[in-house]
Length: 189
Image 1 (tube, rainbow, N blue to C red):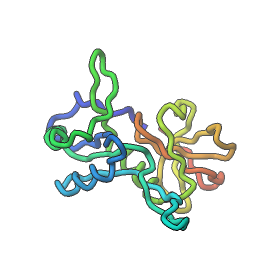
Image 2: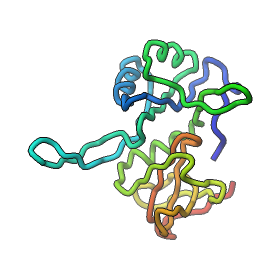
Image 3: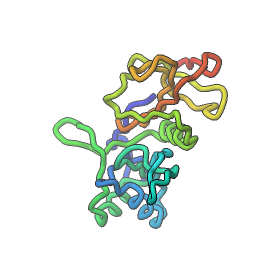
């Protein structure tokens, strides 16, 4: 996987995936606003059992990572749009003495979206500090509903079975859990 994007390498006209926060759980409101303004965006979603009136349970599709939304647009356009929406903020990282917005490379973002959009109930979402990717091996899944998705092979404390992490680097990761040996192909990078 490549490093988190660096805005100094891009012009204002380049389309980038910005990792953003929609504070106070307003990621779906931000998504609706951005889509209304013809801006591509992505909110990782998962199914969750929720209680409704009269004690009935229902399965609902909800944001998988609190306050997180990825926005695919130019630097100039997102700056213009976010100026009118107080709850939409950049996720940032240190760059010397200042902080810069985090961007995710196109290929990495497409892999992350593909894994998330399976809505597989065994997906586990992790924050960046919950996993050490430096120990991992780059792999591609070669079978099943995750066929063709590339990620990093890891073992985490939450289980002993083999897992693949698909990363939106520095922001979030999704784990595809419990893979058999025949489903994983090691990549040479």
